Image (cartoon, rainbow, N blue to C red; front, side, top):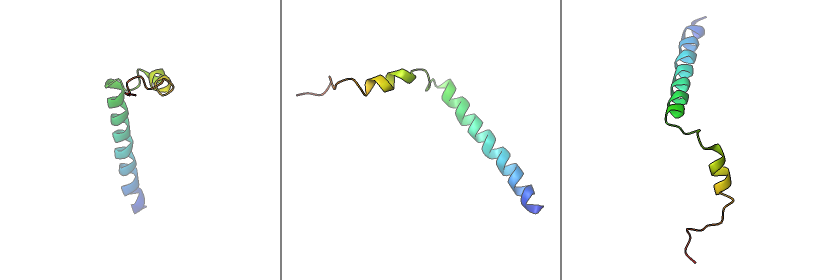
Length: 50
């Protein structure tokens, strides 16, 4: 029973920290261009000098 007094608050703290980080990534618009990175890797290296 004493383990629950430690594990429940720990789970709540870690869960709220995960939620905070996830909301921060949404606000910083990291998920706006999901197709750009996938297509950018297929593009030839135009910026690389020959």
